[in-house]
Image (cartoon, rainbow, N blue to C red; front, side):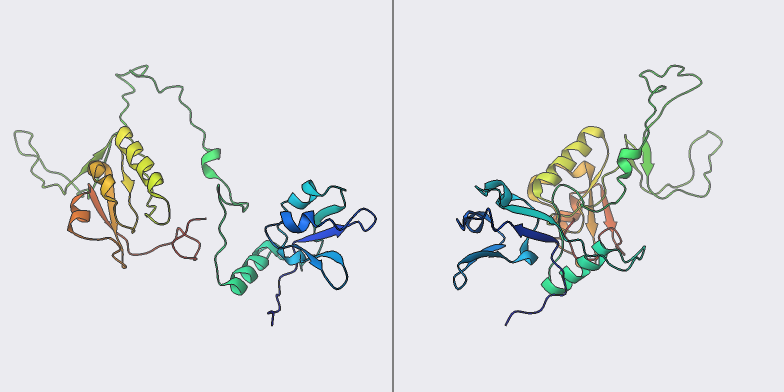
Length: 256
């Protein structure tokens, strides 16, 4: 018994009966099981709920009998509960899975990096006026005292907490091994090493091949303690203790 789906088909498969010669090319070419041959009626039909709109069947149809178009169904207007949101919830509820896309998000989220304006007119080496406009990008990470005291000889009396110096004031955020691939983490570690900054392992442990980047590595310890051991903690510049999470969209450790 097939469970009733509350999801309407996203696409409508239109087949021109005057052109279709029942050659079954669409049946053989579709990997989503949209097209099938009805043995009783001797005609090709479609499971429209399986269609993803790839148009492969359209391209391979020898008589141009197929047209795929969006289902024109509409929902009650709501700025928050948009059709895409409602259908995504239904898909996850019915499948028990999570919605993932490759090559970035397929949602209309703002890509803030594309909106950054970098004005490099005064950034030269040396600076245009090094006396009045000294440039220093180095940043120190660590607890800062409310005030510092010096002795009569000008030496610092205040005991400072350990400080970590990075040459570039931009760090890579945590992306765990498992949420992203080892190749991604290798790229982050190498880039951090060459730029004089830090990358973050996330809570997925540290692959042995990345231990050589310890001077530029932040290792993360979270409640699950995935991959945490003595070597993990010692092969790092900083140990980050994670007490909360808000970066991922509530569907586990996979990054869309």
